[in-house]
Image 1: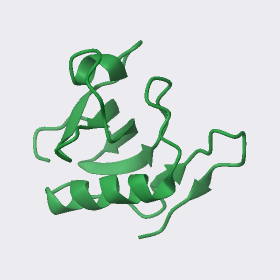
Image 2: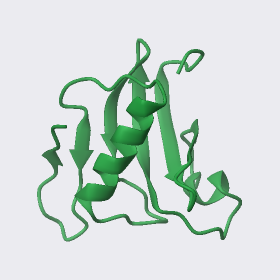
Image 3: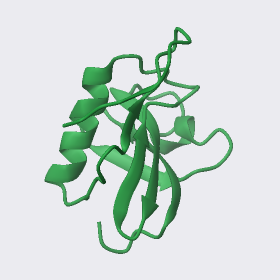
Image 4: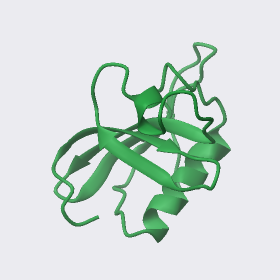
Length: 104
């Protein structure tokens, strides 16, 4: 994770389970994999001092609505050298339910 600047990012997990991260911006999720390519999961993350301090499933494009997928994303990121702060994983149900923190 070295070289990642503090800031807001979008991520998309492709069908091979690779996670791609880009700086956040308008309509960024569909551009990560090249427009119409399918994805396993997507959301946002925020980095501060080389740690992910917020990891979510928020994506208007892909609308990932299972918390297990978010856990899989967090585990993949940690296996690939990303540090995730305590209480950073937040799941937002698309049915309007309250967001909640996932502990792993």
